[in-house]
Image 1 (tube, helix red, strand yellow):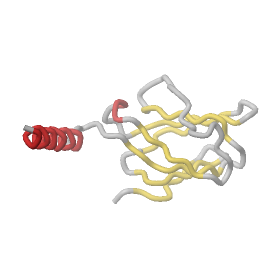
Image 2 (image 1 turned 90 degrees about the horizontal axis):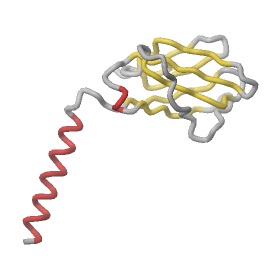
Image 3 (image 1 turned 30 degrees about the horizontal axis):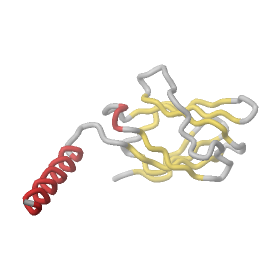
Image 4 (image 1 turned 180 degrees about the horizontal axis):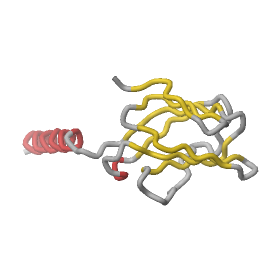
Length: 123
């Protein structure tokens, strides 16, 4: 009886993994390098077609100049590839970066002049 339960559990587990792989909405992950010249206290990422910034994604509540963080966009954001990012510093200044293609992105550098560069992309 125990063996049948273990086999059933293994089959269900494999099926659940394959259904996640085949889902059109997958979590997207990429690294962001802070090249702004200041320490950031908030980072928001949202699909370009929305007007709501959602929650701050900073894991340590500060993002110092020269440091790198990993951004994970949840699968429940949908199948969009284009995202916007809003950053704020300790004195309330903010910059918005628009049209970031998270589907091809591996590493992004954000700059204090409002520009960004793809440092690495998926092939």
